[in-house]
Image 1 (tube, rainbow, N blue to C red):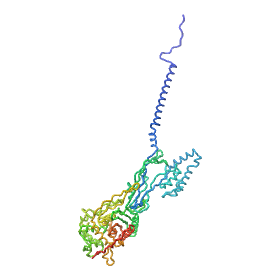
Image 2 (cartoon, rainbow, N blue to C red):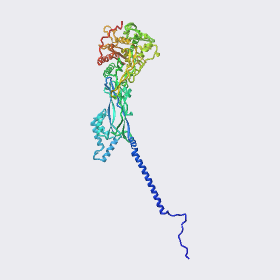
Image 3 (spheres, rainbow, N blue to C red):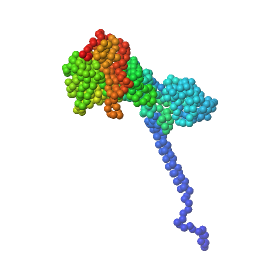
Image 4 (tube, one colour):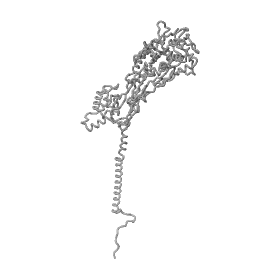
Length: 633
């Protein structure tokens, strides 16, 4: 019987051997299949996204990319001009160009181009910079408005190891274009505007100054002083806009020749002034000469059109260069004719004369017994010359400038009516002329008058006014009693010459037409001269103009001595206000000299200005000479 079969040792049932080969191969194919499906899905998604980006969203994404590499820049508008009454330019702007380079970028670009094409770019950047500098110096010249543009100076700028360098600020546009056209990869051009004052210092106290302000946003010409500042909104216009390509990470570094305009700027309006440039020149020279001759601290003169109140000339002895106003002192920049108040002295006596005639208290030939002094409250007022009681005509009181006679008449007018007349003449308030920095002057209100106040005001002390206000008082008398507030800006001129006349201010009837004529006739005697009898001479003889009737008044007012806080016995304001011609008024002239040396009169200044006016505007001579009037009986 066969014995049992022999076998090897058995493995425990819990221990299994490797997976069958067939099973392993099945799992691998599964993973590969899944991977293929995922890859195909990813490609489908990428394809859909590509279609979306390049097709549906192409324009939007392109705009976004453009925004990332472009920078919007405001374009300043062309500034309006300032013209005189005849269209002569007092201030205007011209276009200039700032030429600049990005030195580091220019060097890098040149070196990279040379590495790629050494034949075309045979020289080094420094040698190329020398060529550029030579061309610029030949085109611009060795200097442009104070900036050096010689070859060596420009070369040193081109090779600086910096990101941005301005080569010249005020190049002529044609020359700048020539340079940029030759070297478009290196040199950039930037718009600038330059303010031009063709008459230099003439009327600079009125016109003011404006210059290019690079620190403004956007950079633009900005008014700094005078009308340029006060009328900046009118002159400046409306800003436009452009876009430029800029260096990555720095919007201030503009890549040359990448500008594109989006919105055109709207030019500013021009201002037509009431000033006559020839009269302004003559008056400015006359007042400057007399101020220097008399050793005065300051001097000013104003010419008004008697019928319209327009300012024909307004001049001061001190002026400044508006293109270099930083060097001017405060006195030079100040328009003394409106920004300086003073006590007018006897020029103010016209208020008493007008009130006394208007209220029917006196007639020109009425005789007053004028003593040598008069007491008002605790003050004793005397005339400028010693005399006992003398008979004077009412006309003579003003022609001889009697303080005592004036106060006698003022007392009959009364304080309330006198205060009202001061108000009608426009004192104590700005005139609204449009002249920048105008002061209001000071007139004490009636309820604050002390006992002696009415002894000061009628003779022109204890109140203050500007020269423009003083001249405006006489304009009212010249214009049949109708005071027209003075004005400086006549019209605004827009695009294509569209002219917008400024509305004329309403007049104030100070006194009747009859009163104004009577006062004009009375004040003609101020310039009266009688070589046989000095008692019949007016105080303003030097103001007379041969062939013309002149009405006016001299003034001498004591200044305050700061040491004693009292009236000085040596420092005066000397004034004159006059009407030309008195029989058919055309112009009113006011003059003020601040502390002239000695007993100088402002009458000769009026004479010279009035003489010029008769010639400049061909003023017809008076048909009759000024009638002789008995001043002192």
